[in-house]
Length: 288
Length: 288
Image 1 (cartoon, each protein chain N blue to C red):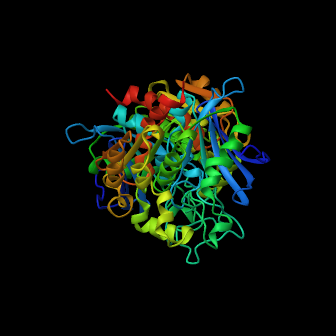
Image 2 (image 1 turned 60 degrees about the vertical axis):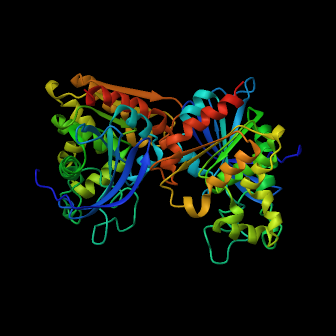
Image 3 (image 1 turned 45 degrees about the vertical axis):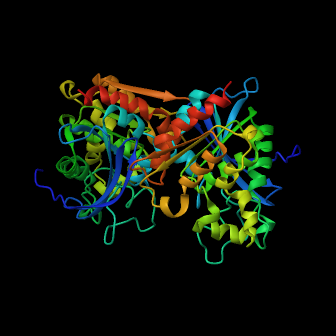
């Protein structure tokens, strides 16, 4: 995608660690609705010095704000000279399909970073194309950033980061995740979302299952990958299945580092405790 | 206060930087209502190694959660071995007086860290005694902490930290604030709150005005004091008056360092950018 509508409205800006946190609204052609995103620009960013970008994908119910307010990533990102972009987690607004029961794990706030094929979702739920194509094109047109990109995320966003990176290794230098939904084809959150968005043909689901993708990833397309998982995470045994991802990595000899952390849960208290490790991990590949 | 009811209910706990963030509910005798507070215990804290405590007082509309979720203080507090305690900003619950118009700057969420003398506030609004006496007694009875205390806060909580420290220098090693309401007797927020809580005798207000207190502080009762103020703060010219505090410090030769920061606003993006400086400042006096 080279043509992107660069009309944006700035909603807020806050100086942060010598850089800037800014929120914008724009009309997404891919999602066919108005979308909000946030960017953190480190102090080094300038037209003469475009900086690399870490894309952060948030979990169920989140918006662009959770990570920017709670992860504590700006301190080290400012030091390392890395921009961070946080999109929303689904299309939103009037006329956008939502779960009729208002469930937190389907519809608004639960886009699962895929392109839906089923009604009523297919009209707007194309978060895969949005995050992979339209948003980076917009970011790279508007801001002093390079085309070096890394991707990370939490829970549903960890699933998003892993699947987008595994399917498009040429787009990213590296991938990481906190507490990702690693095998959505076989967990309740994934089965519910994939049934609705992709239909009942389970073959279609495998293109959005990071364990499947990692197991089948050809040697030449491997990216450095870091995953952190808390062992006191309430969703660990039922929803996340890191052991399946680990098995897949072993089968394909994928360069995955998966770390388990005693006592940590699914919250931003966990993410903030280890976000510096993720930033330093990505910086090895993003910052020349 | 030596007798304190140590019955508490733990509401949540999250491992954070090797330590723990925990929220509790307890019945406050001083406020005559149920109150929530949060504590961050660094990994060093144990019965054999009680750690000092930084009390953090939040601003208008906040609870114990804002600082714990957004300030990014745990990383360095864990490294330095400092506990952090965040009380709520007012009494709360059924039967607690609130502003009839539901204003954000009076009543619930706006206790101003004073002991109210006027009806209907006097029955519960005694945040000064709560933060100064009851809460530390409870904290020191329940947790592996020492009686070394520092105090800091933001906006209304910066006012609270400065006034409590200036009136009770023997209770604290050091005081700091972000964007404090420095001269509440002469700004709209302060005039509204003090009129309601303390009545119309302005002489009574001076006991809760940090500029007045600092101007009259005797040499032997000075504490190391650090204040940070953003210059893009929307409330700077109308509500905060750091220049009055600075004049007061000069008049009494008070050891105040007041720093102004170009571009920073009133938000947690400002606080998180400089919280490490405050932690290191307090650590000089808290950590032997």
